[in-house]
Length: 247
Image (cartoon, rainbow, N blue to C red; front, side, top):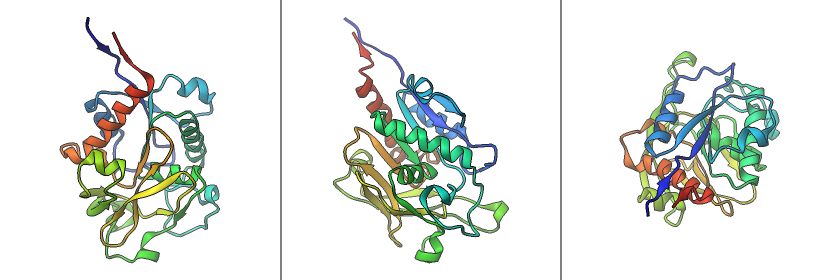
């Protein structure tokens, strides 16, 4: 008797027409999914029947990108807000809600974490330096056209799923953001923070089978097992949910 495993289909949201963010190409997300044993499926922001669009998928990655329009979380305009694409925002908020309501494993990365925050009723900090200073640089800013990622240390709650799958409580992360979670909606908990300034770096859902958001970019550390374990556990969770192992 032999066992056969069908690779899970992992949807990855894509940049909108108004977003040309160079820091994390979609190929990096796709490569991470393939390495973990999944098949990446790129999801353009489009007006479709979400059930038909998402039903074939086994998991969802909400990727990085520009800032979310403050109108979606009753926020205020800020001069540093950039690359807003309200069409992408509306699409991803619907996709995130569908995944949460239907227990589809979901991983939010950078902007993706913020989408999970907003769709669950939380709010965002418009610009981290205004409230936390610059003791930790969450991105390098030599100029608007030259925004770059950087690295800093984070600490994880020892009893979190994230710490258990990474197998550490402190790691270095690749970071590229100037906004962060301010408040977290019901059902979520913060499980990681920037080591020096305390900015929220990761969230986990308390009831969903697998819903995690990370403020950093694990796909940009392809040779670091600490970060690749996130994708591995995520893909494994899709196999368990859908019972894709057949005899």
